[in-house]
Length: 313
Length: 286
Image (cartoon, rainbow over all chains, first blue to last red; front, side, top):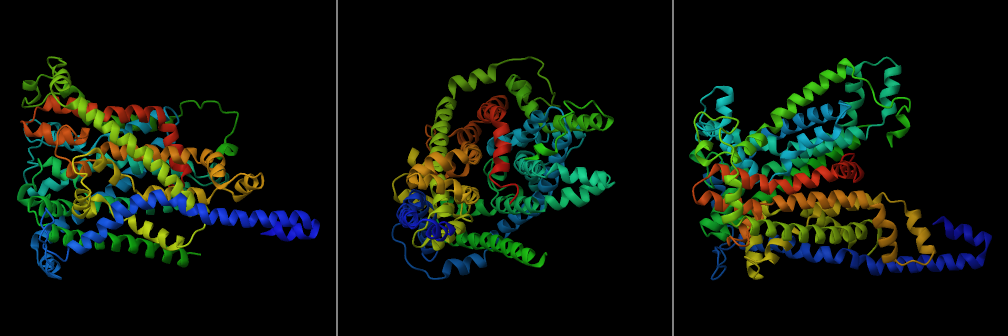
């Protein structure tokens, strides 16, 4: 620190106290630093690290729900899981949902944010309109759309004059879940985009306008590049959340797996195995596989980000 | 701040053609967006027989508060409401305290093993009840916390994401502010409470509000950890119990709106802080 060296030149007495207080400060940092993070770490260890380790241990056993009399089975559960068609199917459903939902949510969130940002009057009203569905519990949103999609009494078929068996046909069941999710969750990403748009300095646009840039140019050369980071964040958060989809799918199908199991997601499958099938050991192995997939996605994102930072400029 | 860019001689712009088109577009989109909610509201004001009529009608023929009084009188809905409130308030309070302390600790203090611990916490971003539900359940079971408030609350209190958001924010607080207070003789804790926390108020507000929303709306964890209708939270009670004795749509919609209402009220009052908080935490500009 410069304070110490500058102090020595000017007044040795003061330098000594500054140096002393710097030591005190460092010591305080050392002592209290641990206390600052301790409460969180206790909770984190109990409810994140320990279950993870426990799950890892259980995944090598044939434990049932009571946790008694479990014996070690080595990689047996994993071997079984990799050959388990239902697991792969469930993983496929979660992936299919993610592939459909993430691009739709990102694009819609961006368009809604642009709209809300550029309308000059009643900003709070637009914000409230687009964000309101996110404030509903997932089960309420799911119940609501379950009913909207209901073939006979539902509004969707009525409004569009169609006769689609949304909830009972396997080609449409997951689409219905995607539409529900889109409506329910777009508000969160919308808010992130809106905050990002507000953070773009206005003088950039004014300078560009003076230079004769039209609206399209401003969009392509200022807005979109400035939003690149937030788009990366929105997509990453949405991918991680979408892979973990559960609530909407399960509620819209009355806690069942949907027509021909077409809305059984990965989370639902692990819970079925663990709580309905009482096979905690096997369910833990499936959970660990799922954890590894999520971790791989998250690490891939970090790796891509680092490469882009090194590559660009 | 973009205040410098704003031209003072423009108190309120006139309605330009562009603004008219945008506003109309916004109104149209909003109507589409809110129509499911309106549909829920109108349904809740119908008698049950009219609610299941084919073809459906938007407005009730006979307006009635039947469904609303029914769920309030003979359901467990008031219990669920109280449970939700207790759980969400506790979770939010604990998360705010522990995440603020940990975020600051990681950003501004030194201690042995900090790097490793930080790495472990970041890895925790990938673990959620959805990913490791079954082992988390058996852990909580082992602690004897199934079907208790503790079991519902504590596992929701270790969100690595919130620590990360606050850690990012605290990193950006100018060190000079703290140093000045240190030189005046204040200790770590004084500095944290009197200098750092007030600066972080918008970030803390955002973290608090998002934690509250997430906890109020959490379905999966309470669904796993309790099967006792007296202990259920709003989303769980409505989804699991209402469905079990034959769906009464008007009642279901009334209950759903009741479950969503508190947060909508919160948002109406705090929306400015929420947007500011999102911008302030650096979430948006990361």
